Length: 160
Image 1 (cartoon, rainbow, N blue to C red):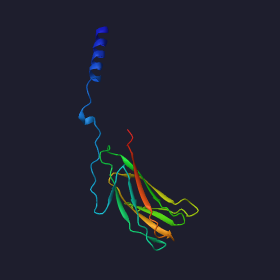
Image 2: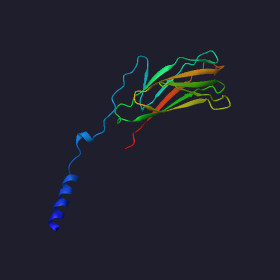
Image 3: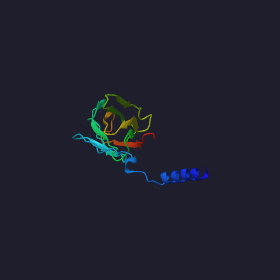
């Protein structure tokens, strides 16, 4: 009996010593096809000046973005945040994001009561998801002020 238990123990050790095969590695996301004119948003983020419309209560052009999580494990999502800042506190801008599903998200802080910042959490978007962002000049008397748009995407790995 002792000999049989020893054989089982040696067999268990031999199984534990076998290296994992290449098929055990997670499948990684591939690069996205990017529509013409769209900006790629990776986990490095995007920061750019954004020309606001000169006419109060009007929206600027819709800027297109693609969430690219290439090289991450399949199932990874990007937790996306859009932030707009500017230097003249009396100006009042708003921010609008439209997801590929058609859902519209808005930020509408009231300046100069609130800080000179607008922010929208777009949620956890899938790899190659698209969305647009627009700046609205609610009331911006100082038209030489150029807002800065910053987009961040934090990779959220799939649960094991």
